[in-house]
Amino acid sequence: MPLINVLCDVKVWILLGVVLALGIGFDDPNASTILMFVLIAQMAVSLDGIQFKRDDFKHYDKEIVVSLLACFGFNTLLTLACGLMFIDDSHLWTGWVMLSSVPCGISVVVASLIMRGDTKMCVLSLTVIYICAIALTPLITKSLLGDSVNPLEVLKYILMFILIPFALSFVVKRIHPKRTHKSIFINVMMLCMVFIGLGSRRDYIFSDSNVVILLIGACLIRIFAASFILLYAMKKAGVKRENAVVYLPMAAWKNSGMSISMTMALFATTMPDAVLPCVVSLVMEAVWFALMSKAIEKIWPAPEESQTASVS
Image 1 (cartoon, one colour):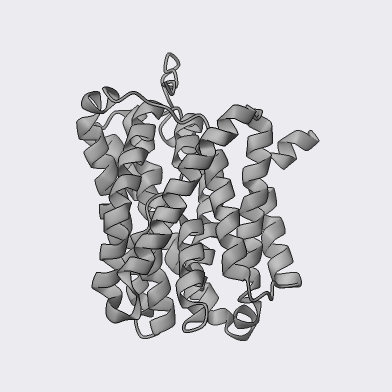
Image 2 (spheres, one colour):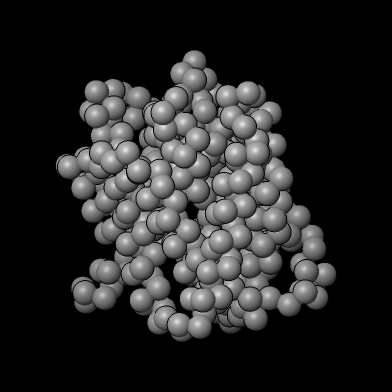
């Protein structure tokens, strides 16, 4: 396999991040701050190339509503349902709530491209989802965590993780990075997130591995089992394939990096283990994407004449 293919393979970087995290750990008091910079940099580069016209929203109004429900309806409720397994542990439950409250990952656009979905619809839906997240993320955390979290603090971080990457994406656009370079940079940032998030809780993982196994099991239900059931349900219901493969990652893929950064920033001293559900989810979502991007053509192959919608 050519070196460039290895460097562009997110699975390699995720695996390396896990090995480094468990092997040497990451014990730094500024872990949450470092993680914020990593996430902002990754999101800024990921947003490069996402463009649309204002009139495009009228054409996709129904699809945008469905996408919003997939992210903050199906995905959020299922995440909370899985989190109920850990409700007796206030730290882990807090982590599940933080994970449930964030929007879907920016990489749903990449998923749409690879799975040959309607990419323009995906971009428009993602924009609306992130605008709604400014209100929904603080609302969800306040409703479920009460006084243990300040909604204004959550709002501050959600604005930071949305507005700063969008602003920086214009700088990235002027640089005109090649697609392979962007892919490698995003993967390196993914490695850093896994290394920092997982490495900072290395001692806990080794001391209570049973909990980590339960977290992996919950993520298998939330991400893998639910997405395959949802995919077959949409196929049977006659949903357009190019729309279904956009709804699917939005219903399965949370912005776990954002939830890791926010959880570490808000609860690093009071609930240090709250970040674990978010870190495990980040790893499992990456594995899910690697498998689903190949399995989709066997489960629901795209018509030969199908062309990926361009982002314009």
